[in-house]
Image 1 (tube, rainbow, N blue to C red):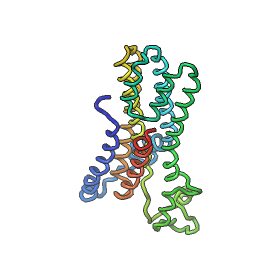
Image 2: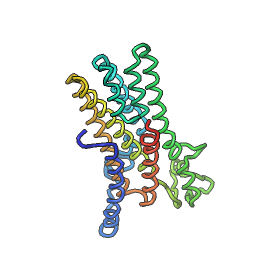
Image 3: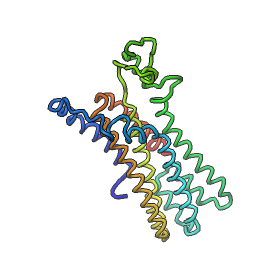
Image 4: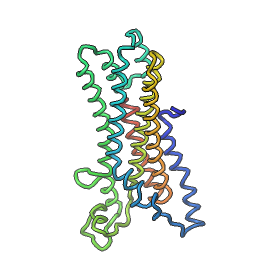
Length: 277
């Protein structure tokens, strides 16, 4: 897929994280009054933040379901064209991913297609939960306020003029100002996790298409629709990367962004690389 592999976006996020810090320091030194935070693409009320961050869980869930459903449909349609002697070749090429093994079971199980499909869907739901649960714990809910909010409070964060309001979200939602403490970057966590995980899934789809095209003659419309899907998902990943770049340039301290990014990479590493879901 245009030279993109599983490591492209994780490495890209790390490069943006480190590469934008000198630019930010130069901006602060020579253009201290330059503040584009009200620009439509950069503002907290702008499209990037409202849509790609505010609805990031819904967007990722939708594209994840579309991608997995497409892969399943292609495999089921191509199944009659696959000689059983090539199953070993498929196993070898896919390197033991649990998702891919369950998909192979769907191809092999001619007697109970529904059961094999349910097994594949179950693995995908486990993968989705494995991605969402740590993100939700960090920035949405952790037996009340999120883990990031609790750390923010423990490290000295406080609501100005309203000490009875303990946590960041309740303070800001009331129109007050919250200062101090270490506020890990939720935007870094969201954008890096979802873009890296989606790029992993897109590369996985491409491996399937290339492999099956080598074994059979894939219809042109399948190859064409696959390329359109890949381009759409790539555009979404790039939009999340752009949003991450904006965060690095204009929001949070360097260490706050580092923590958010490293948490994201740990999630993707554990779910996709370590567990091979």
